[in-house]
Amino acid sequence: MSLCRTIDAVLFDLGNVLVGWDPCAAFDGVLTRAEVEAFFTDIDFVERNRSADAGTPWEEVRASVAAAHPQHAGLLDRYVERFSSTLTGPVPGTSEIVDELVGLEVPVFGLTNWSAELFHLAQPAAPVIGLLRGVVVSGEEWMAKPDPAIFELTVRRFGLDPARTVFVDDAEANVRAADSLGFQTVHFTDASALRVRLVDLGVVPALDDGGGSSAS
Image (tube, rainbow, N blue to C red; front, side):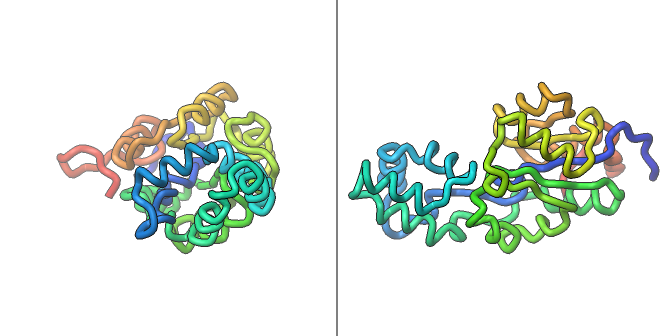
């Protein structure tokens, strides 16, 4: 079935869109979830992780943690050393959507906030990432979403027209940033809802099975 498309490409976030990420999993068998959350709060893990995503080497992040919270430096080491265990595998249904887009010859790309030092672990956890024509990794560019500059870099690198590109991300701040730059946007919640939105945009055909749209 041919579609009259107004969309030329789909740009995917990776973490919790194509590959699951659970940072607490690095501490399974060592700390309870409550203890992990307390550790994350003590060191402001969200900000530390954002710094690494924006290019700061983990060695520098560790030095900062060790200076302020020396009792937690070893736990941060464990997080980095066991990062592969935080990647929980393909997000249900999204691999099938990427497969479908590739089959329809819709170009697919990635834009991810991810440490440059740890990005090599992404594709083994979710092989569908290997089908993307290219991925902009924040840690390699020293800038991160929702900074408009990383979207602009992505547009230039992949030759995208934002108005004809669907951007998919689970973080509302990133979706708002992309929307302000003229992208067609999807706030990702699950694969079924994503596919419905792609049908609405004319990117993929509706399923003719009488049961409504799904991702599989």
